[in-house]
Image (cartoon, rainbow, N blue to C red; front, side, top):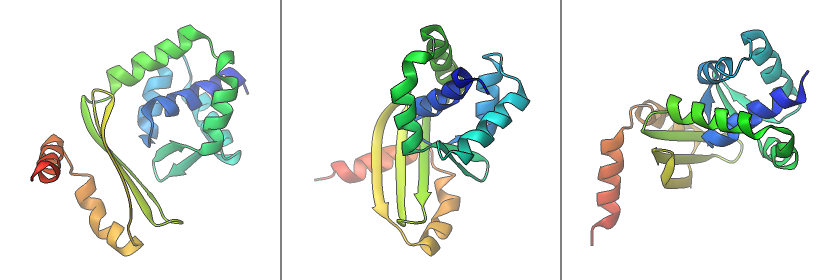
Length: 156
């Protein structure tokens, strides 16, 4: 399998800097002339080699994947890097919440992004039962929740 295409997937995951839905990966990479079969084969191979992690229908770049990408990024043409960057900017909403729960360490990583800029990043301990209760609320977070949280922390 083409190393350059695997690096494209790793670079795309690095650009989103968090979990991304497989459907979004498919849309972004098809726009870069990948076939859906190629994408699925690449994702499967990257999971097997522990360069990415799959959580249900979401994908996340692993630490190993980031190291590999940083070491081999020069093998990815600049024009392709720019095309991937454009895909991420055009596909993504202007504001979004992103979260990832690590069951092994029982930590939740929560971020708020606005136009690609990280405005909030929180990392805290949360027992699995509490995470299951909180999960429906995490998927409903919006820009107004960031404003409320900001006001909470700025109160004197």
